[in-house]
Image (tube, rainbow, N blue to C red; front, side, top):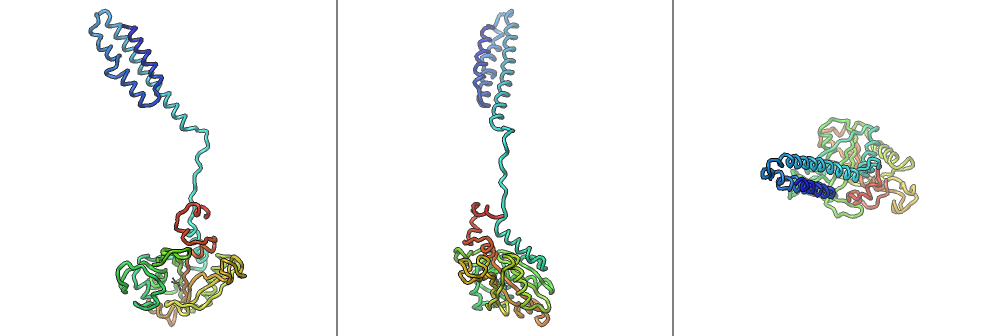
Amino acid sequence: MNTRIDELLAAAQAELAQANSDGELEAWRVAHLGRRSSLTLALRSIGQLPPEQRRAMGQAANAARRTLEADLDARRQTLRRRTAHAHVDVTMPGYPVRLGRLHPLTLTLRDIRRVFAPLGFRAVSGPEVEWDRYNFELLNIPAHHPARDMWDTFHVQQDARPGDLLLRTHTSPVQARVMEQVPPPVRVIVPGKVYRYENRDASHEAEFMQVEGLAVDERITMADLRGTLTYFVRAMFGPDRDLRIRASYFPFTEPSAEAEMSCHACNGSGCPVCGGSGWIEILGAGMVHPKVLADVGYDPDTYQGFAFGMGVERIAMLKYGVTDIRSFYRNDLRFLRQFG
Ligand code: PHE
């Protein structure tokens, strides 16, 4: 009978050497140490043996059991070490950490802030879902006034009435919000998202960003606007830039202007970037309309101001040579990785 146990032991050990996974180890344990294993059955049948054989048989079976349990542990250790080695080679160099980049619009916004901060312009913000009152009425654009056609508007409610909500079409409503809140003097820039009901193409987006500028004080003149914008284009596009101002129209400024800078790509001699003219239009601006000042409670006889609004994507496109405005919103990593 002892030879029978030796055979069981040898067979079990041979099988164990073939077990290569946790699942196989468990199957082996059930087969050779479980309640229905040959060894367990042998132990159980000891009672049927002649009394003088029972003791030796019991000892042999128990010894075999302990041996197999130890073998199982050893095999488990071996497998564990083997898989650990297969997966972790501590001498291997680590995986490179892919660093994120700042979005080109974030970079441009930071640059714009950095230019205006030392001039005393504080950055403030306003809501993107705006009342008709701030987006239009307080900017001297009454309901049904044809000037509303200048901004293709997403309305949050059905009809365009003065009390209605819309997605702001420009950052100019924040002019009125700021002036309503604080007495003059005021000097702010307003970076933010704006919305227009517009077909998208290489130079138009329905969602884009603007930076508004507003300075109100006693004795502010158009020369201050000119000087501020000249400082801006030179800080942003190099010391050789020139600024020119052309007459334009916005209901909330009088006079209104379009500011152009000498082309940074050809230095004004004419190239594809400036359409051959040597000049690039960069923003709308003007002197704050006296009616706008009066409507927010400022005395237009004492205070004047200038305001401007620029498209951030447009500035970024010029700065980085991007030719399709939609690139900023495609989240294509091949594009985004080129910045920052
Ligand atoms: N809000 C105008 C626009 O979106 C730009 C502008 C701002 C013009 C401030 C004049 C003064 O087109």
